[in-house]
Image (cartoon, chains in turn brown, blue):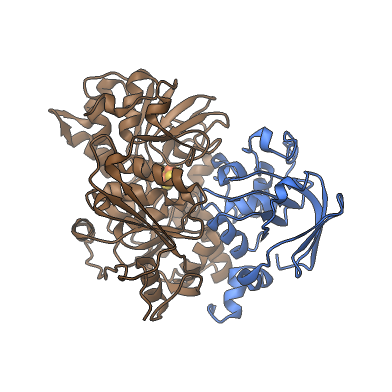
Length: 435
Length: 189
Ligand code: SF4
């Protein structure tokens, strides 16, 4: 049998075939379907239109609904959309609906999914959000789809896909303390461009990847969509399995899958991570790369630390490392991705102070767990850029208008670089604060 | 829509990397496309975050429609590379459909936008090896023969060969993934 990549193997298993090849169009079985408040109402509409008002979802255990985008707002339409989800979850008796205003509320879906045990190696996850690719960090096939596809999956548990060829990125060496996964993925996107992985899978490998914790691996996979990738994937190791098993409370069985030796990659590139430098993506595209060192001193109006890319415990730990005993010079917004992370900010300590204390003492503002200003949103969204200002952010997109105002300028960077820049008010190399 | 034999109308030209935030900004995503009255609203805000200099090439600064209109005077969008990159929001092809666009021609598309256009049956996405966004001007009068994938520019007299629709043609012909799946026996309702 022809050797297969991890992605090809997962797709073959889910299509009931012995093997598949890049370019094959196949129907696959879906393990988990996720939707949220932006695309959920449309998905539910399509599901009902095609399967009937009284139709039942194909498998209640496999549908996960996580409102996260427009949560803490007075916008009536946004609140109405959450009502649509709430009503549907009750009507369908869905066990995995994480309602706003309840104990179960989570926040950003891509971080909530693994926290709640919905990501497992070898599985297929579709979500109505392009950053669903984040879950590739758990060794599964995970990708974003639209409402129509999601409505189809909701009723059938199946979807057709075209098998993507795989690109492989190998990271040699261990990351120095001033670099983070964000720098690696911005470097990759800068190299291959924001269309460099269109219709392709991106597999990450090498000691540099396996020395990263699971949250950092999620950051790598999260941004493959910014290179146009269909999915990002990292083969599971003990770190993955330990995390997954700790969260898999229902003991759902799963089978880890690995690339065969001799599997064919359409593209391979190695990086020595010890030689990389802190990177930013300049306005208005994630592939508009610059080294921090080359543009340091660029004036900023605001700093933002949050989102599925840069709002996890590892990101806040890194930012706090720089912000402790310092004061920010520009408005700085801190948004934990999930309620679990929000609690972590109150409990985890650095030199005797909680991370929350460190941020507040530095003069940063802390928001409620959600997507918040990562995608602009209603005008009253926490941290939204309502004027044409310059912002450095740990988020993933800096397209025109993405964080609010059409003429706002957004620089994407690691939490270390964002924190260092918040302290000085201009783009600053984190190496000035850490060895 | 199902596949028509011909499409004709005016072109609106954009550049490379037109992302979904430009096509339909996030603040309008609170409309629910499953409700017809709200579906119409997407047309009003379609392409509202395209930077003015990039809007309506080659000159730019040509609004897609005036602010209180729901439908634009254009039938074709001509884009460059990586059209529709960014988020998975199906609201993007929906916004163009609601605004009256039938066909988008680009050098190539971002994957999710392409898929949503086809599976939802909103738009016909054609790829073209030639860089048409530098040959066609906003307002040019175009005529497309769908089966032969020939695009004729009545304004300049030029004809461009587009790439055949290939494997998505049957889905577009059926009118989207639901009728297609029914046809191939993957959906029994
Ligand atoms: S945090 Fe930003 S990128 Fe992530 S799901 Fe929310 S809006 Fe999308």
